[in-house]
Image (cartoon, rainbow, N blue to C red; front, side, top):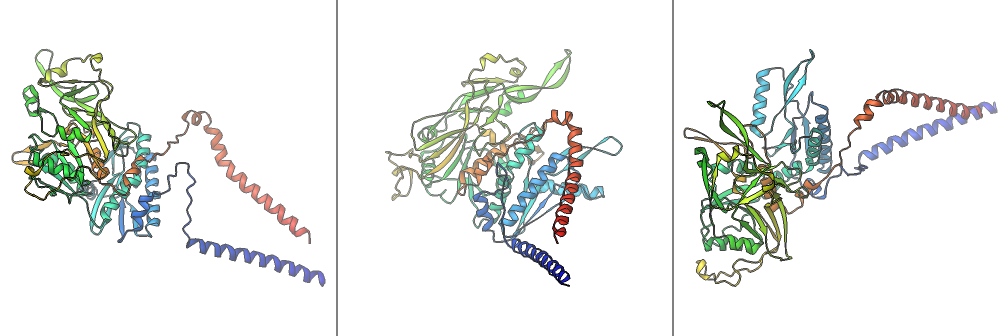
Length: 570
């Protein structure tokens, strides 16, 4: 009787321990659901959101709904991109206090061909870039498949597209990696712009023969995702630009008056930012249709001003062996004409600096009749960084010069291209001296009480020695004018980095919260060893299949052993 009672008390003790353990697990699980404990154990902290991102997400006032069009049957590398997008959006949702919601949509999921094509066109109209893929079918053939690696961000009735693929490298794996690196920046930049209480204003200066509005329409439409865009002349009125976060001077052809120079100078002294796109050599590209044109030196009366800020645009045209190919009509077999691609050294493919947020992971930028820049002065208060440069095989020619299409038929001599890495775009950051210091300015303004500032606040500017970088082609049919995508080759469809470069320039100029620094993020590409995969494939298949089974069997044996040992004691 005593033994029976003892056994019952022991069993009751174990049951109580079991129930206590279960209750403890339930309590801990319930409590942990209210805690947001997340640890990033990756070496490059790929799942950790940056400080600027967290600040934007914490201050969201309204909900954001995101539609990600990256679902369905897609290649494995794009599945990795999809997983990264999902993980990033999960982090965004948690950091925002559940104010961000998202879903993945397969744009090719519908069976109705017409509905699918309508959706494709709708997504293209909204700004998503389609990608054509070769997909295998059941019968062993291949079919064309269209995917849209991007998303639409919806906020207060406003929709903004975000494209994921970087396309800055021919390597597929590297392309996906660089796209993953840029995910946080692309997403948070759009969210920050949409949710901001005030939108920065950017002005395109007119009145000096700048590039017409239709030829800057593409960059204007894309900048409108982030800024309010205005155009107009400054009319020699100091203070007229003070409400703008940045101004763009795109390809002036007429000399600046001293009054307009004073307006720009004092705008900079008050902390204003300027994007200069200047050509010191005038070349009429339209004249090339007749076979040749002329390059002539064209001063703009802003040379002294830029010199005071720390740069000089040299009035010389750059030729570069790494260049765009143009199409020429040549004679074949003595009587038949045919179109052939030929390198055109006057259209260089400019190299972006690899380690700066503006130019990191950027495609080559297409230039046309480019000049080059020298940095001048030793003022320690001004930091100077080259953003774009020519290749290792470039040279310069001085105006006046006749430029003929027949030059494209000649074989260039490599040793003649002996001026490597010429700067074409330079960033200036710091405190600038006024170009009107120690000068009388009372006759340059109607405001008799105007007082000149001789030193700027901490500010920034970017000087580009080629205005055509911002110029988009225009398709003209009758009286209709349609702007073509900036930086896209109309013959090959290749996309150069012009648009992304200029958008990054403006975003960097006005960036106050450090979001642009996210473009410097670097992730390590950890690829499998293809040689080991081939030689050790069978071994690892056996390990992966039998390993989990053996672990389960071993765990069962250990459980049985310890259970028997505990119960045989009594």
